Length: 638
Image (tube, rainbow, N blue to C red; front, side, top):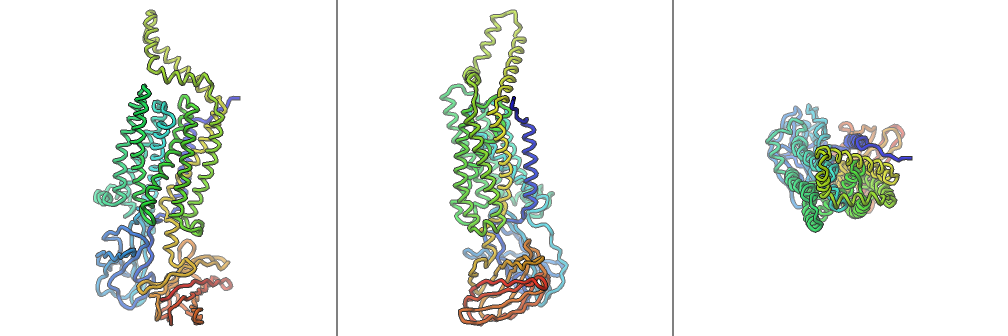
């Protein structure tokens, strides 16, 4: 029984449909404002009620951010600007803090602080909170529903990121496949077309990202993509410089592709071909590493802990991904559309893929430790959960690759087919001359007719080889396993794209102050903030309590409690109670009965802390008539 494989067009269509469906699902579920930096504090605090108007509003972030003149806006109850627009850099040492001055003579009422900036790893972040002067009041401020980096522009930017990764993998992996595994593939048209399309895809996606960068980090309006002033501002940023550098390096990559499929493909002298291959290998590696570096220099690897180690590790990781997945793509195309792919080429690629997997495991372990940091973050944060999905897909991909290796060992090219390939390689330039000589010896045959017959014979021979190839069960099995491997790779690349735009688990845990068993030590200029998950067991019984004790020292303090659902939205519960205990001195529990300010927000003023020490804060949350729970956290009061 003859074994046949599906046509390449159908296979590629299935891959594209799978990629689009999965990418849409991931992008729809991803938080658009996910980023490396996070807001860790503000003065005034969210929901604070202060007696008189402050001179300024300041925000504290977990890591460095890029602030513009309009990054922080303060709006009065009527929606008018209450700030002076004068941005102040209050950073000191490791503390990242920015402020904006307020106008004099502000009346009492509730004020809204809206902020938007770009984190050091290129992702936009935004948020808003309120504080009140004198007493809370109604406000007419309507904040946008869409977070920074969301909406249509955010979706298009995310797709462009995905496409750019795919184009990079095909360009770099395809070139490496030809040089390291199948030199004769440089003259095979389907291989040439695949690598060139990889270059075009990466170039086009980079241009789209450059144009969308301004609305992506700003207004969110697609029309602003063609704002020349905004484009100029983007070019002055780290991300703009990285994208511009990528375009310049793609110019060098175009030269590499032209030489690979031009001068290199036409070389017949073995020594000359070897020397040219060596030069192309060195130059191609430098260009590929440079393009990979444009991601490392502008995204997660460039910020956080150990950036000097993380950036070269990230470059190695990207190159290994490209060598494996890009080479896999070219192999898949070759198995379906090339006249024949020799067994030796498949075996060499198998070794390259194995080496790439080894590099991916080593660099992936380091990156996972750096971005996650703890077992709790691996399972309790979105980044950690996506990382687990990626690890699972990697295991599946390695399993399928192992099956492909088995098919490779079983692949048995017939001796005649191999001899025909070798003869075609060594006598490619002599055949036309022989045909001319034979034609000259037979003057009765029209040269035009002879050429036509030769073309027909070549077509028949090619068709015969294709039928023989398709009838080979080992080769058909290899094609099926490689196709499956490529399909899983499409999914893996989509997960990786979303992962690179998600806030790392280490940062997410650090941003939630007080997540450790022993809370943070209080300092005079920083309130004590704790975050307490709870579950009463009833309907709407899960959520998080955010508690702030300001200024977090002995004497009178202001207490603010925010009760939120797991998705971050306010949760209205019937009752919240607080008790403070200093067990080392047998003081307490001191009860605190906070007043309800608005949905999900309770506060109490004048909360007395009589002496310093490690205080246990107990919060009792009642979500129904019978469902309640008590949660606690230890904090140091200085």
